[in-house]
Image (cartoon, rainbow, N blue to C red; front, side, top):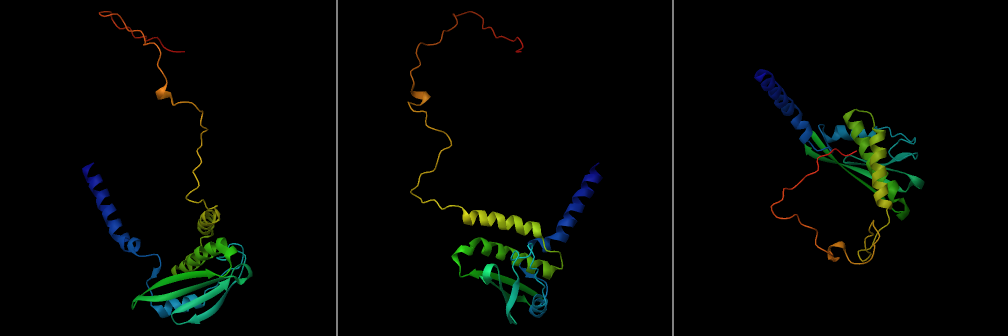
Length: 195
């Protein structure tokens, strides 16, 4: 039994040592030089169906420089996203993605665009499928927070229970003291089953 537990522990340590570099690496860093990241992103196909990074709107490449690529799209072309390619080393690149909009009514679409384009870039550079479900869940949560009505600091919080009125129970008079058992008499506890 000890050998089995010890063997399991050694296997867990070996697995942790194998996975540690990947788990500690930032999600926005890629093990390829800037030129290769640029070439991959410049050729990236961005779907324009309902599951694409900008929803059902096409994303069009608007600027292509050696250290940055920009796309625009969304409702009425209101959203612009730029991926800046930052060299970490000769063989590693970090992506700094920023999305902006000029339209104040496009905050939910902006949140979805940032999440969707981050996933699109990551999926393309890592050679994996685009995760539609994760984008939809994350964008829905961010949109719900962004669209929630703002409450001023002076506005009191609502309480889930109505105030019954009157004094709290701890301040009510007790009335007569409960009866006490006569001194020297045995205490009887009812042990009969209930029900």
